[in-house]
Each structure stands twice: as C-alpha cells, then as structure tokens.
Length: 134
Image (cartoon, rainbow, N blue to C red; front, side, top):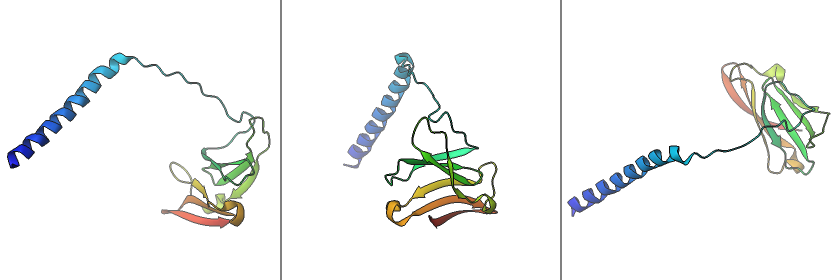
C-alpha cells in the first residue's frame, strides 16, 4: 500500500514537471504581442513624487493624490481639471527620501459619514499608521 502511494506521488510530480517544461517550450513560439498606450490621465495637473491615487467613495467624485513629501491633494475626477486643493499636509511630521515618506492612504468604509482616514508614513526610525478625522 505504501509503495502505491509513493508511486502515485512520484507520477504526480513527473506530470507537473512535464507540464511546466512544455509550457516553457511552447510559450516563446506563441509570439503574443500586446499593444497598449500610456497617456496622462490629468494633463493639466502635476504632482511631486506621487505614490498613489485614491477615491474616497463618498459620492463627491473627487480623487486624492498622495505625495511622498507629505501632502495629499484632492481634485475633481475630470480629465480637464486644472485646480487641485491641499487636503492634508503632514510634511513637517515625516522623514522622506528613498522609500520613506508619506506612503499610503485608506478611507474608512463609512468615510462619507465619519470622515475617518488613515495614512501610512515614516518617522525617524519607523513607520506609522495614523488615524485622522477631516
């Protein structure tokens, strides 16, 4: 009985290895070409070291851009928008550079009612997640 299980496991391993090998042999010959284009979604706005763009899902159709230097900007979700507004500035509370700074933003699922948001940023020596109410 034990030999049958060992043989079964061995056969399964061989089948998996053969499948992977066939995949590596066939994929280069498929010559799949993907076409895509990149365009500036908001050509009239500019940001310094943006690390993310977020939607509060609060019905206002605003977007929020997090800049690594500690500023969160908000603007109307419109391709032709020309105005952005400072939403939160914690640049004096953070350490920035390299992979440090203001790095993330999350809105509470009930943000529209409670105004809670969470930001992830680095201070000297460690990272922090802080809760803000705006």
